[in-house]
Length: 353
Image (tube, rainbow, N blue to C red; front, side, top):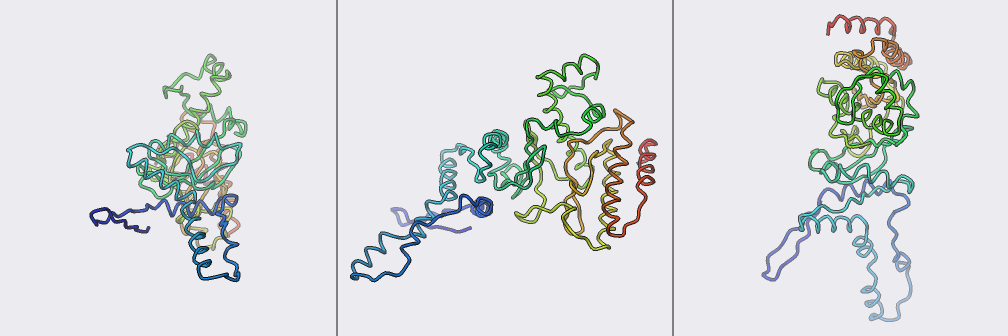
């Protein structure tokens, strides 16, 4: 942050505070290799013989590359537009610093604009990761979140094509219409779901179910990102990482054996918390567990299921536990996945949580 002072006609000084968006702009610049600043006056810095002192003074006056480049930079221009909008008591247009690929630009803007209008995000800074179903972006947090950074998960329109065992997952959760009302999973409803309108409703209810699941788990004390909002095909949640560097996936790090045992127990504790909340992750592995020193955060609940609606989902619980045990076995952690999963399931059925 810096302070620039200007004097008015009466000799008083007005103090202009440049907000922390300058820091966000610097972060975004590292992710826009194609939009780095260019200084057209660089060639003028090469030494040339001066014709006279007057000529030197004239050239110095006409060319000030650093000042010109800074004032014309996109970050400064954006800041000026924001200040103008604040003085006029209106919201500046949503023009995020990070520009996605041309093919996805309109989709990203339309997906995140409501978050900006609701003061949940202030800018889109970079892409954290992109998968078959969705892309996650690092955003500057808006005033409503009280966070410096937040993560926005934007689903693609045809996300269902990449979901495995779709029927099993749909049958293992509450069926709801677009108003959030529970509906009977009868023949008429299933026929409606196969229609074009029904397909769009499925996408909307699937994403809202992920948000509600994550909210419920967070409130129960599970190690999941705090969810802030869900609008359309986008989820907004806590950004997990140090400053502007996203936390790595568990599969991307190498652990000490002592730490591996502790993290293994943390993951098992979370699986039990999930079950106590009538939830099985359904796709848990080292690919959707974020790592920080001595801590883990579990993400991606798109395929979570509710055992209350289908008691045939035990194989999904067993698979989650098997994947976790298989990963930590590389660090000498010995555990029998079937015994652990069976004990968890028995406690759940008896209500002994």
